[in-house]
Image 1 (spheres, rainbow, N blue to C red):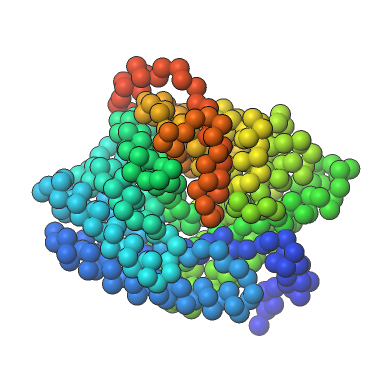
Image 2: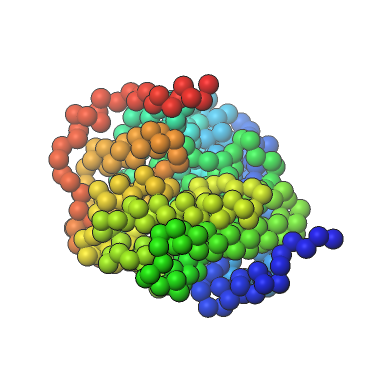
Length: 462
């Protein structure tokens, strides 16, 4: 039998696990619930409960078994479902109001099951409206504030833009008002941490809130998200200040290769235990609020005084490009977002930079050109007008379709908070400073509504 992993390689990974905070960020089971579509709300809920319960228990047992076998910390266990908008279509065709009620009841039922068996998040309370709305889409958009406010594990995503179709401005306007609504339904606006607006959302993304089970996916599939900011920071620091940019890029690439190999191993083992197909490894370097687990600190290890300083986009580009090239050699199947995340509250280095004023919303918009974050986990004043939020979302959507990449917005209007206030969301969500948002009037622009056409890149796609 051919040897898959060299002993030296295993030794290096063990060092990363023991001393550099390497872990697997998430194992996400994609699960189709298309067979749960019914005109009967009770039948749909019963079917979804059974499927989430059976497969969720298998996932929890498999992840714990593999984590113990290899001594690898797996931070979260997640499930991604078929977009709920599709499940609600049959009900919404007769009554949007009944579909809204059904969506909330389905969310509560899934949340009860997930909480009872130890699933951290369930993605898929989603709708795809980048060109227009179906009845089921409307039901999801109308209900997601109440669905998230009444649950702890449900994550929601609205895809409002696509390189193929352009940007649905009407959807962005409606969703922006719902974000404000959700913020006021939950303490500190924390419900908004489980909601994202996206452009070009991929079908196999293991990261919530953007995770859902795409229509091109099999019945069940296991997708893995690796982590490893601490590993890459340690590699750069070990190189020292004299290493040139090409050497820096090469060593980051080598580290990414090893990190991804671990993700591939864990993903295949978990999939085998469940009896599901192995899907993809998402190469994204994802931070956490823990000290030593920061993407911002990687940029600073390259020589910047603070993340957000001039040069930050170039440093982030080096990181993302090297990670992609190293990861591409280490796994047979790359998917998800596969870039680098710079969520402000979830990265203690980013939060520190934001408190210093080096990271601003404008700076984040510039940095998203070379990564896959967009505006992520950004707290803003609770009195920010919905049309200003809509304009921010449109900016991100425009970059997403212009560069033909996946980008998202996860923004939290914190009720009664002012710029400079510090808010603690707890756990992996971290704490952060409330950022200032330019108050120039955008109302006349966003209220034009309609559809922004796709870019010229659409013609390249045939």
